[in-house]
Every structure is written in structure tokens, then in C-alpha cells.
Length: 273
Image 1 (cartoon, one colour):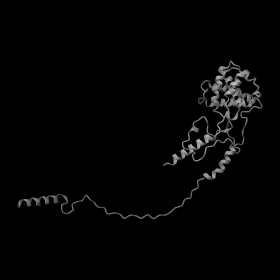
Image 2 (cartoon, rainbow, N blue to C red; image 1 turned 180 degrees about the vertical axis):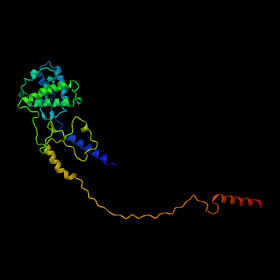
Image 3 (cartoon, rainbow, N blue to C red; image 1 turned 120 degrees about the vertical axis):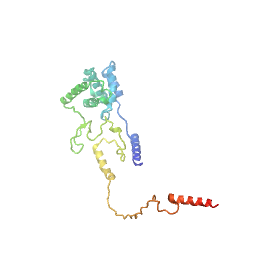
Image 4 (tube, rainbow, N blue to C red; image 1 turned 180 degrees about the horizontal axis):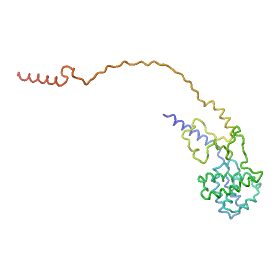
């Protein structure tokens, strides 16, 4: 009765401990975005900066904060905002990325991560409903053409071709979409007592995860042994069937006959006095 609730409580306790111990420090591009916007676009770029700030909220729906530096994300936000509004694109093309300690590859990868988010999951974002889907597709075509025509540019800077034993899998942001839960849905919030026997950990190295799973697998293997035992059960003897409602064979005052006989004898006794 209390087994399943106790597992859920233990799972929540583990999740709280892991949350407290997890390193949530992440790169924030907002301060860097303010600096690069003022330096590249000038002071008359209020609309562009406002759009880029709203876009920075959607940036955390991708893996860019884990992969890129603050200036790489800030330049990616600035470029995508400029291309969506059609303002200052010529200034974006003249940026010297060495001044911001980043490369064009990192900025392009950040922009494509955002474009994948807006084209595939636009309704779950803050800016997905502000622009037409065709506008995002047009910008994505421009960036993809640049990647195809530039030898040193690729879609992903770090690509693992043998992450799962040589099997070709469609990867998104360096993570297998076939074996990882999508962060856009509600699966990450649905625990419902599932996998409460284990501990949730954040592992980004697939090889390390497989090695740890191999080490702990013998401890979670359930082994059963079946055997039969014959037990003799005594059978109780059958009881005779009596009908308590049959009172015709009762002697004395049973039934109406006995009652009338008693009243007649009592009346005769009064007559002799």
C-alpha cells in the first residue's frame, strides 16, 4: 500500500539533493549583447536590441549556452535580429570576430540552433508568433548557403560519428534525438514515479554513461527461482442438512394444537370452583 508512494518520495528527495549539488552556472549573453550592440550598431538601435533581448530568452531552449561563449551567443543574437528586421546587415558582415575572442563558426552554429528552434517549435518560443515562418526559412536558407559555400564552416563544430557503436543516427546539437528526451515537450516534467529506483544524473559524455551503466547493471538485475511444494489440505466432513422450519413433529406446545389444548384445560379448571 505504501510502497509506491515511498518510492516517489525517495525519488523526490534524490532529485532535490541532485538539484542542490548540480552546477547551474551558465553563460549569460545579456551583458555582452548590450556591449556588442552599442559598439557595432551604435546608439540608435533600440528596436534591434529589444528584439535580441527577447530572443536571448529563447536561446536557453537550445544547447547553445552549453556550447558557446557569451560573446558568441551575443553576436549570434545580434545577427539573427538584424536579418529578421533587415537592419544593419552590412555592419554584421564587417565584424572582426577576433576582437570578441570567437569565430564565425561559433556564431553560425548559434544562429542555426535558433533557426531550428523557431522553424520546428515556434509555438513554444517567445518570438515564434511575431514573425512569419517563411521569414525564418529565408534566413535559414541564407545561412545554409554560406555554410555550403565556405570550406571552413560546418553545421556542428563538434560532430561525433561513432558515439553509439558505429550506428548512424540523426544528431541535433550533438545529442541523439532517438535516445534523448526532447526538451521542448513536457516529458522532462512527467516523472510520475518512473525510474524512481535509480538516481538521475546529468552526463554529457555517452561513453562515460555506457561505462557507468555497465558497472551498476549487475546490482539491478532481478533473478528469480521457481519451485513447487505440495501441501495436504484436510477436507472437513459434510454436515447433515436440517430444516428448522418444519415444526410439525415437535411435541407439547409446538404449533397451534398445543396452544389450544392448554387454553381448554385452563378453562375447565375455573368451572369446578
